[in-house]
Image (cartoon, rainbow, N blue to C red):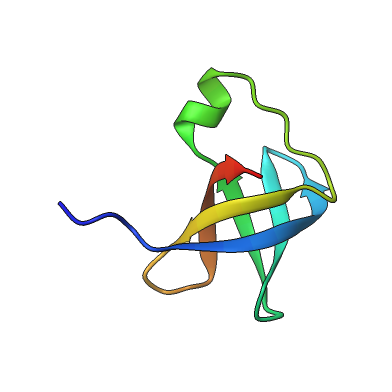
Length: 68
């Protein structure tokens, strides 16, 4: 199975229910949630962190898969 393409961005705001507002490299802002592995290992993501994420096919939501 091919690996999903990832994009990089910076967390600008922490929202309720483990959601984050992320500003992508191209300037767009989207809403993202944490991937299961990050939740299981209690990885903390705060405003200002740079993250790598996978976008949904529509491109309006994302899943944070790595904190840089």
